[in-house]
Length: 192
Image 1 (tube, helix red, strand yellow):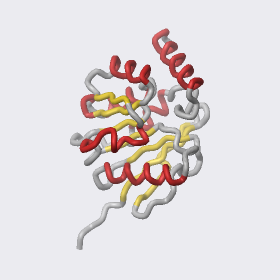
Image 2 (spheres, one colour):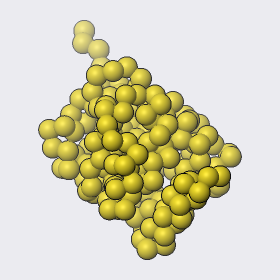
Image 3 (cartoon, rainbow, N blue to C red):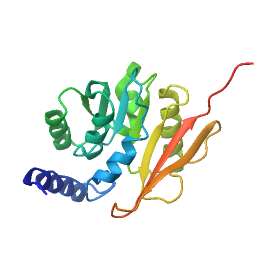
Image 4 (cartoon, helix red, strand yellow):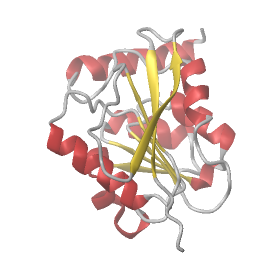
């Protein structure tokens, strides 16, 4: 492990200790997990990919290996992480703000997205907040495009929403603790 990586891990851990209810894990996502998450993203160009709660950028790095960096918008609340992300991903748009309110933060840009990736700690949130968050994500995405949520939960982290399908895309056992990758999509409707 490089000293560069160790410094990021330490910053991540300090932020977790300061606000554990805002950061889902005391350690950043592992490389295998980040790669498996990025594999769920629509690789076709056109439209932005939005990452919610990127932390120090472990998943961001994997996303930028799959899509053009300038096609990425990342929303992070922690000012230290925002500065770090801006330094490491200068072509991406890094926005400081509440990722749970990403549609308000992005305004008109929160439409026609090709993918959303969320590492936010949703399981501990209220039923109503999780439902609103999922519905907001579905409205922001182009039809059939993925909303990827990774979570420690072995059960889907969002309540059922009519017309939205969910599947567990992967379980990454090498992550400590193991992480589940959930993909939500609004069903494509066909006109008769």
